[in-house]
Length: 328
Image (cartoon, rainbow, N blue to C red; front, side):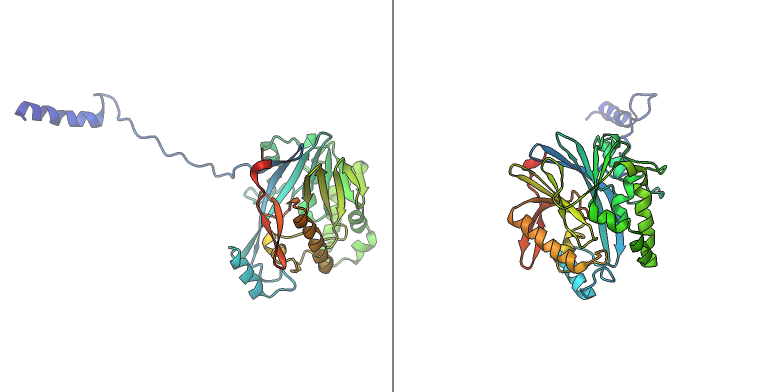
């Protein structure tokens, strides 16, 4: 190459780096920073013509579930079962998922989650944000149906100011559950640690007093939606069965804790069951039916999106993912 060409090449190289004289170098774009917030948590599927939306309310963490969580299993048995299912025995993630059903007649919510939380980084109380993301206005909810009255199921009845979070909803409660929690004798005889729960039930339902409807086993809430008496977890725990032709769904509530506990091990008695022997008998009866008839189920404390089919597996059961044919 001639000297002149070499000099030209040498002068051109800095120009490629610096751009046109007098202009700044074009810098590569800054990396996109991911949003620190969780993506909206909702999931939809159909049951016949009805639309079910599973709405996530977050999750709590129970440290060391091998200690004091299951009454009739040893820490070694619990840890072994958890490891076999890919879980960390040092902690248990306890999710909360609220079903919202849209039928031709009404919009029905089953339970209301934990309610508003004061801590900015709380892992629970996400229901209002996820309802908004799913396009569900609390004012559009026609009926709120309850499985039972534990605090993580009734907390969302009140909004952040203590008023009714569902301003026009009819409130449907199991009559046995209502009778237990509203009985002054039961409240006075309850252990000291349990008495705040009785007071909480009264406070949460107070703004809805004129709109409360008590129902018994087999009551039809809407066409095709019936109450199912499923006692044990609490005295009046109630599940719900939806049917439309061949399409069926069971809204199970707290028939189980996480499926890795009470489906895999239906005989385990967790501390939150009021009558653990009855709770076990109820579990086996309902899940035998669900497995035999291949009924899709939703569970309040199952991992999100908290639904699938219960399959018999040896002396217990397992949760099989629902197929996608019914997903929008």
